[in-house]
Image 1: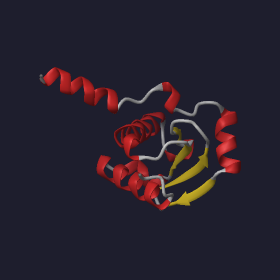
Image 2: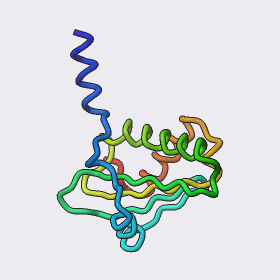
Image 3: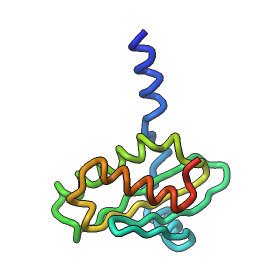
Length: 125
């Protein structure tokens, strides 16, 4: 019984490849045509896309720190998105850009920042 529940939860919270923005062209499209929601710790660029699932691209610049720090920030960002993906409206492309303050934050802060920006952008269902 427990294994079945665990499998159902796992499927709901997975982050598939089709939920990611990877190409430079796609990032540029969201940057240029999308709208911006700004916070002290990060920035959302949002572009509505008809008939698609929600996609996210993560941007962590080299000014934020060494590779270890940048990878940690990206892992945390991915995890927060993965956990809250079901709460977001479908049909949007998001580029989440980290700022310096986010490098020293814990998981709860990442979650708070993500939900605050998503609420401001009217992405929550």
